[in-house]
Length: 267
Image (cartoon, rainbow, N blue to C red; front, side, top):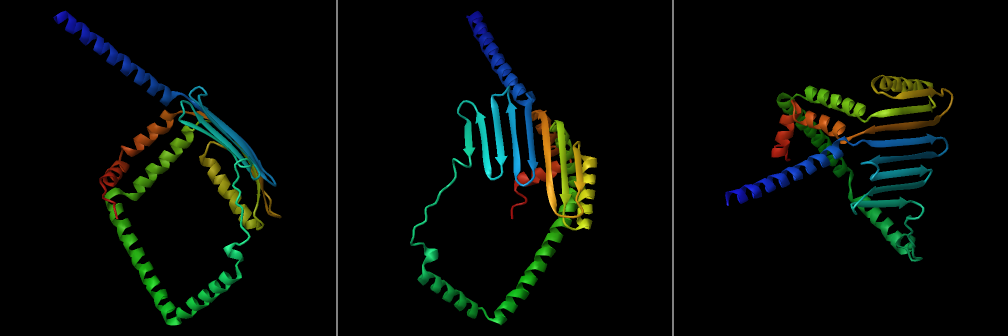
């Protein structure tokens, strides 16, 4: 009898181990299987762009294409989870307007004009002045409340520390997106040479912090916004979820998340 119980227990333990092994294997595939993506596009008179992604050995996939006003995209996840296909030319909404449209009814138009004039006469100058000063008072009170909230918030959580942690997270996620190729070429002209120069300077600052091959030239004589891009890369869920989890469960973010979860920020 004892041998039978041991055999049953052994079979149960083996089944539990097999199930756990399958679960771990599935999680490993979901977390570490790479998602490959690519996109190309250009902007001249019209915007043209297309891109695609493939995940889980191509089982999950999607694509999009933009050509001026024409948009197409599709997303496919097997087992009936998701299968979306959209084409703006084939799925456009057509609305048939009747001849007796309320917007074209002269009687309704005259009534609307009369109501507008009536409401305009009711709102006297005195009432408008009172509303104006009441709005200023509420605005000042709102600013004071926000300042007090910001002070108490900073005393408890440290806004600077949260901002620094958030910036580090954004930089880490940007790197973990896994760009293998990212070229952006273009010409910017804002009409005013000084504004164009400022835009070029801002692009140069951004270029110093991101792993992108950005080549932007300035048109200091006339307005222009043209260019093209070519992006290709790969990433996985682990590279995205792990930095987010680390960000949430470490100071100074975790105390804020915990208090929010408790509902201390309601209202």
